[in-house]
Length: 192
Image (cartoon, rainbow, N blue to C red; front, top):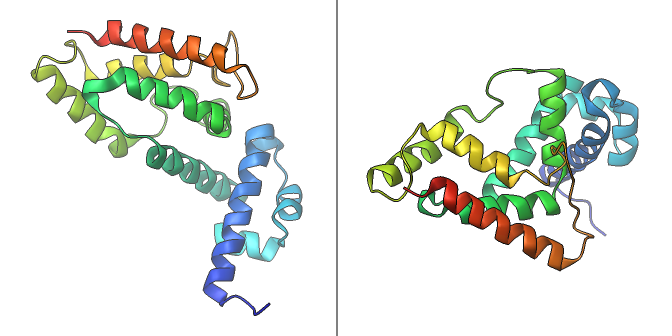
C-alpha cells in the first residue's frame, strides 16, 4: 500500500490523538488522564502529540472543542421547535456520552461557576429564541435562561444526571417513553 501524503498522515494522526484523548479525558478527567495512555491508544509518540497540541491542557481544550463541534454539526436548531431540539440532544447524548462527561470534568476541574463554554457560538441560538418570542412562538423571558432550562431537561438522563444515566443499550421502549416525556415537558415550558 502506498504511503499517504504527509498532510493526510498528519490529519490521521491528529484524529487518532483526539479520539484517544477524548476517551481518556472522559473517563479520568484532566488530572487523571495520562499522556502515555493516550499515546499508546493513538499509536503515536510524545513528540507528535506535543507537536500537534502543545500540552496536555491544550489537548483537553482541543478535544472539548472537537466534540462540541461534532455535536453542533449533528444537531439542527430551530427556536420554534425547542422540544425537537431537546429530543435531538437526548439522542446525541446516547450516541456520544463522552461530550457530557468531558464538560463535567471541565466544570469540576476548571470552571466551577458561571457559564460553561459556548460564548459567541451560542449567540445565534439566543437571537433565534428572541425572534421566536417576538413572533409569539415561544414564551417571554431571557433567551439564555430559557435555553439553559431546555438543555438541562435534554440532559436529564445523560452522564451529567444526578438521578439516572440512560445508555444506548436500554430497550427502545424506555427511550421512546423518555423522548415523549421530554418533548411534552419542553413544549409546555416554552409555550407562549
